[in-house]
Picture: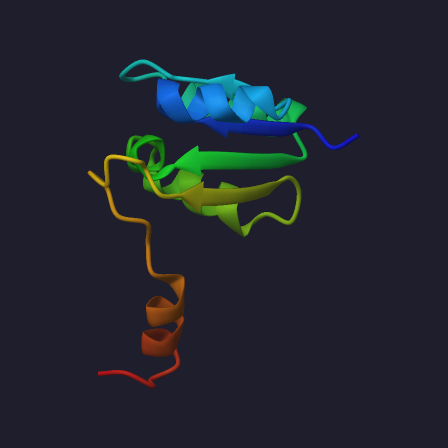
Length: 98
């Protein structure tokens, strides 16, 4: 069975808990530690965009770039922090957009 972890707001975490995911709602300043714990125990880690924004950029980039566990940033239900547009970033890096 695949172990899934979700780090984010309490309402969304409740929904993920119903599916069997291990959930955490990190307090301010605890997002990095919560991510490290999730990476150690899960095969698939979902981060709300708000939690992702609270994690050191290098740490977050390394986690997302790693092949295992799979890490995905998902929209926060309040929409306070937008999810990065990876397609636009890739097009810009390839020189397809100015």
